[in-house]
Image (tube, rainbow, N blue to C red; front, side, top):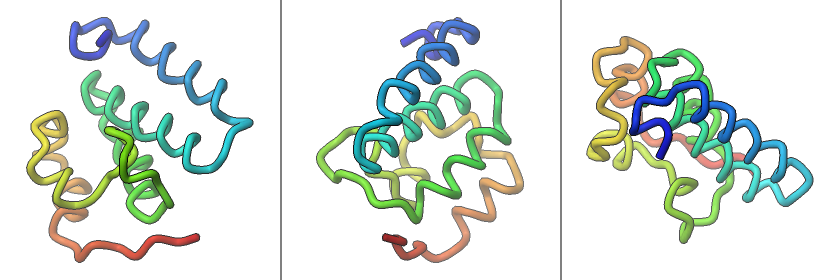
Length: 104
């Protein structure tokens, strides 16, 4: 919510805190936190950090029933929450690529 309200500092702090809390959990739970952090970065103007996480998460195992962690190219293309990245060359390259395979 902080990211969508324009409260960058608080948004990033909460995203990093979630990652810290979930760092001892399963890889899927950690990836869920990373997905949320990627969205926070996208919404707060930290485009390169968001794209770094997206590149990793597109090949990472996730829980398809969690709202953030099920990251696919379709989600990135059509999910309006990713619009802030739309003009970034690296993001456009990701969208133009085939869906990567999950690495377990």
